[in-house]
Amino acid sequence: MPATAVPKSSLLRRLPLILMIGIAALGAFALRDKLSFDMLAKHQQQLLAFRDAHYFWSAVAFMAGYAILVALSLPGATVATLTGGFLFGLFPGVLFNVTGATLGAVAVFVAVRAGAGSETAQRIAARGGAAARLQSALQQNEWSVLLLMRLVPAVPFFLANLIPAFVGVRLDRFAVTTFLGIIPGGLVFTSVGSGLGEVFARGETPDLTILFTPAVMGPILGLAALSALPIVLKLLRKRT
Image (cartoon, rainbow, N blue to C red):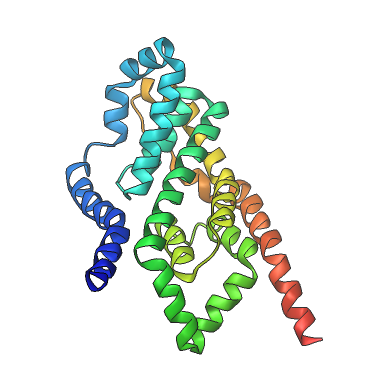
């Protein structure tokens, strides 16, 4: 009996991750053309009518849908963020967007760590070498590194969910830095979404290049530099 209990236990731990990967693959195929600006424009009146009639439940449904979208890495996260601004305005739209994205990211983190992350982290530490040193450095600077991964657009959101799970960072720090780190970008896209009504009325699509303008990127990179400051100070202390 004990010999069969371990594989069963291992399979149960991996089941959420296996299901997420399977559903993500199906969703990427089935929804690749569904969550689009055209679809949002087509159904904008129905969405606004439902929001006006059931504001609380529309907010709950939106955050739950956003969390599922992120957790399963389905296409359409940008459209979803703009939808949050379109339906709920800059505020509380940005709060709903950030909350939904954080819940989805936490779901990915927990599933990966339960399925394979904790074992991978132990193997990395046991083997030593460059990977173990990198793991140790990340764990010693969790707050700064995790915030940097969220603030710098060069790190894809999905990878920023996976890497911490594989190196063994703490869940509470992952959740807090995810929530705080995606606020700047969330503010920008939610702001664009809040003006979608006028964009749709003109028959246009929103200009998402605004995120990469100096006026927007400057403050975000400044926050990234501030997040990196503790790491720099630690390195300077070691050299002195």
